[in-house]
Each structure stands twice: as C-alpha cells, then as structure tokens.
Amino acid sequence: MKRISPADHLLLHALADQELDAAAALPLEARIETDPALADEYARIVALKDRLKGLPKQEVSQDFAARITAIAGGKSSSGRARILSLDHVDWRALAACLVLTALLASAGTYLVTAPRSDAAIEDEIANDHHRSLLASSQTDVLSSERHTVKPWFDRKLGLSPPTIDLAGEGFPLVGGRVAVVAGNAVPALVYRRRQHLITLVAMPQSAGQDQVETPHAMVVDGYNTVHWAAGGFKYWAISDLDADELESFVTALGAR
Image 1 (cartoon, rainbow, N blue to C red):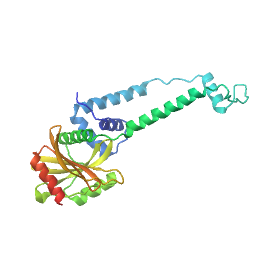
Image 2: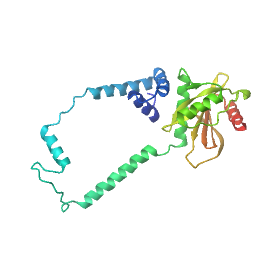
Image 3: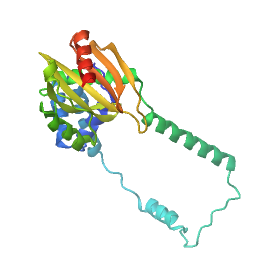
C-alpha cells in the first residue's frame, strides 16, 4: 500500500476532528476522493473515533472518590491533617525518576522539532506535486494576477514569496496553493508550460538566516527538480517537464 506521509496523517486526524477550515478541508477531501490510500486511512481514523465514543464509561466508586477527595484536601478520613514525612524518601530513586523524565521530555521535543533532511523534504514536495496533478484543482487560488496571488498568501500564511508572472517567457502563472512540507504550511506557486504544470515551493528560512545556494538539478520520484536558496526562502521547482525547460524556468525567475 502507498505510504502516507506524517503531514498527511496530521491533516487526516485534523479533518476527522473538524479542526480544519473550509480552505484546508476542501482540497483534502478532494484528495481523499481520488487517493485510495488516503481514503482507507481516513475511514480507519473515523471508525476508531466512533468505537472510542461507543465505549462504556467506567463508573467511579464512592469509596475511591472519597479517598481522592481526602488526598486532594490534604486530610485523612478522620479529618486530621496529613503530614508528609521526608525521612523515608529514597532520594536516589527520586533523582533517577527526575532525570529519566527530563530525558524523555527532551527526546519527545527532539522528535517533534528535529529538522528534516533535504532529501526527506524533497520527497514530501514530490508527493505534494503528484497529489496536485491527481486533484480536481491544482490551486487554492486560481489567478494569473500576481497582485491577487501574493496577497492571498499573506492572508492565509502571513508570508508570501516573490510572485512573478512569466507569461512573456512562456511560463504563465496559474495560481497558488498551500503545501504541507516538514509539518509546516508553506506557499506553493503553480506555473504552466504548455500541458505541463510546475510547482514552485517556497520554504521560509529560519529567522536571521539568509542562506544563498545556487540552483542545482536532481530527479525526485521521477520528477525533474531544481533547488536553490535566495532572499530568505529555500525554493524547489518540480515538474514533469524535461530538465532543460525546467532550468529555463528557474533562469527566467532569477532574471526577474
């Protein structure tokens, strides 16, 4: 079965919990209709939620509730104040527990925040581009006007990459959409070259960074891809265009 990315898992759970707005939910629902793997996983999540809702609630006994109340109130059942004795505390065991808790917390934080490698990011970008080709619409905002697309990204994401119409060079702007890459929502501009679509993903660099990388070409999951960095963004242009034409697109972007 096709592998589902961690970002898609998060989106499916958010959809099942009704936490997505219409702009995010509608494209995901369209992808579910055309992607059997996504549809199966979404059905599994919904079925699990339904089963959990149907589980009987465990009744709490009065005796147990009374004991919890007594502990919370700091009094024993006889009403006398309880004093915690520290004489018999095993401080070595307590210290070991605290160290273990800190290590687990650090490991969990690392797993959530650890940066993904460029190769993993490129796989996600290729998957996003492939899904967009299967969807009924390849854009969230359909417009060849950069003055429409750029403000749309500003409203949705609070940031927007340079948005350039390259119709004069044979690469007209089609619109844009929100892509989920490395767990983050990032801008993705869409261009056309004859019957071929080009996705231009722009991932903002970390605060204070302005890394510059010259364009270099690669093939990711069968798609020609060019990666570079400039102006506070890391860019990936990906398409089923031949490599020379995709590099011409990147050159046209740089010239503008």
